[in-house]
Amino acid sequence: MQSVVLVINPGSTSTKFAVFHGDRCIFDQTLNHSAEELSGFSTIASQYEFREKAIQEALKERDFDMSSLNAVVGRGGLLHPIPGGIYRINEAMKADLLAARYGEHASNLGALIADTFAKQFGIPAFIVDPVVVDELEDVARVSGHKLFKRISIFHALNQKAVARRFAKERGINYEDITLIVAHLGGGISVGLHRKGRVIDVNQALSGEGPFSPERSGTLPAGDLARLCFSGQYTLQEVLKMITGKGGMVSFLGTNNMRDIEHMRDQGNKEADFYFQAFVYQVGKYIGSLAPVVEGKVDAIILTGGIAFWKEVTERISQMVSFIAPVVVYPGEGELEALAIAGQMALEGEAEIKEYVP
Image 1 (spheres, rainbow, N blue to C red):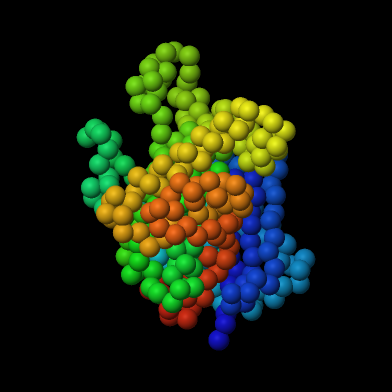
Image 2: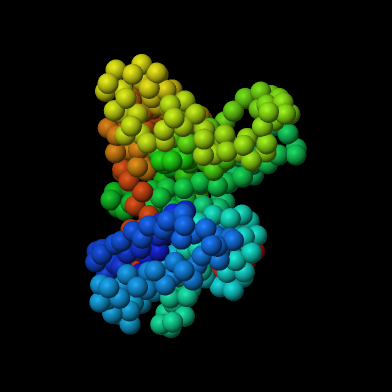
């Protein structure tokens, strides 16, 4: 029997939610929150009641019968590093998110809002594959200095969802194949999936891998150190260079890839140059993961919002298709991924894990 699931995906200035019956989306909606509305909250975590009420009101306007819900699934936030999977929202998880123990991020609100809904209606609440999913091989954690360790922060929800989709469409198990998955969006993450685990991936949030529309990716370490001690920039300004004002924002003044596509169409040579550099870096990073598994890769998957741009996916495919066939699943697909996981949890098709910090 197919269940009815509410899924919630909070962003920095918006809250996306949807109701699914089985794998069919009944409706979805994006609630935008103005800077003025959010300015009254001292922390991101303190916004959760405001956002939960906004969803409640939107559902009432649609005359949606809340008692028909079987589960609520929220986007996972910054938690203690955990293996991928479906996690029941528990008190330990909420305590870490409310205290922002592992950092503040809008996705932290997903579990808090989901839990509030679930308690009102006596139904279970889950999160799925949060950004802190950590399945790295120990050797992949090593950087070039003992004071620094590589960590796993990436687009786990989207990457895991498209990897499982690829396997399901071919009648094989995700746990039996090896894939390289590249998420192309505001951030870029390229992960090596082997036997159901992401054994290596760049730290996509703050300073590793290819540059993205607004993130710098890997920077020359010596030059960065000298800049930090030049006296010209504060710590926050340098961090903003890495995440927020890096990548295409730094080069071309925009994080909108559609703008860059338009600039190239108008003959802007600078825009074309940085477009080529973007494709170059993504392709190079994909290629760098293949030797880890001795080139035995079943497929390379390109996903995320930028994967809608055909020229990008075609250029990257030309670079890396000698490794394995390239498959394109454009878009984020995050609401759908949350809904599918909720169905699997309710139907006993997946293990429900407990969060332990």
